[in-house]
Length: 488
Ligand code: GDG
Image (cartoon, rainbow, N blue to C red):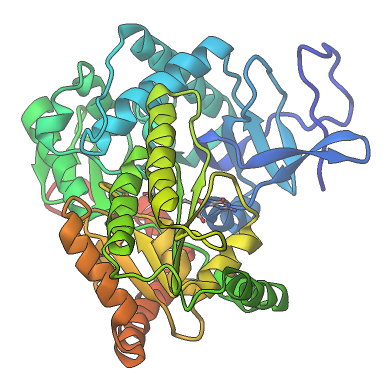
């Protein structure tokens, strides 16, 4: 069921059937709401947008009568809480200026590059920080107004690092979890942040802090000890007032079963055959990423381009398809990246193409999920080469989609996923020659060798899906509060 929320700016009248703000026992807080506005019978409607996090949390939200709090994606619009596909959502408004300063600025031009090894230069602006704090406070206040007595609140990601502490001040009764989807930087980089203490204190307001990999959890605990003088022991820390919190790794995953089913569905099977036929290549190399400087696109394209120009990959036999989904297009660094990538690909194709075919097929657009699934199914080699990545779900989606056990995964050692997917063809994306050799090996290895690797990868991914992730985090969050000392 979808309802059509009314904007406060459109109408000051509360409609009688509008759901009132609920008192929830489970609250998910994320920068974005998992909804999209779609045309409906009666004007516009809201639909839950598909995505791993929604899939994982939807059953818990339904079972516990939970709510999701977040921004709905349009600035300057203040909406009442509403229901979308049976889930209660509570929109948090953002002004146009806040989108610029809190979201595009502090979140995506300061924290995002800093947390990804500073692969792009992080910008520090005091007015961005002020907006970040103000928006985090607004989120915390919304949660405080919605959460029932003793509720479980799960805060997501780097845009909302101050919320745990702000919320604790408003509502000491609730149990707070925080999960960081991106890497947590080493101390030497984190120390650059003018607001490093506030960020650490903000996150440490949570009872349980989750990271993608153990190293990041250790970094965080070490920083609490060194910078805030918290007492710590292994994964536990003692916050002011004697409250004991924990910081651990919970590697996120995907809805494996849904991907496998989609991959085996008749439409996707037929589309994959069609793609293979249309591309007319013996070997299909594939990449799909948001167009982001952390994803190592420049290095990947350079490596594949050199393999073509040196004649080690034959453009008559091999094609490289790269989908680069538009992302953060108002942030300057992303505009520069797009220009660089398109110049690079233009040069390679310009010198290597024939009238009939080009070695690189580059698509700068968002595709439906079915189309991505068909590409996974059709691809002989998936190339994932981030310079730094919290996890990387694309790698796991490819493995889940290869239900017949074929395919080869080339994976950067700097993706969180490399900790689990050890049987992939692991590369260092900064080492172009090494990457070229590994891509060639992934293309040329015997089918039996590839199957052996894929079997191990599939075992890992199948046993650790998104439900395992959510259950593990929520289970640990549930237990927290019982141990009262650092030792227990
Ligand atoms: C952050 C962290 C962490 C991409 N293009 C299209 C499309 N996609 C989908 C993929 C995949 C998702 O977007 C990308 O997920 P990643 O994990 O690879 O990367 P980030 O967006 O950077 O995510 C990351 C993740 O959070 C979860 O914690 O793994 O490290 O950076 O699902 O399939 N989907 C469709 N069309 C496209 O054109 N439908």
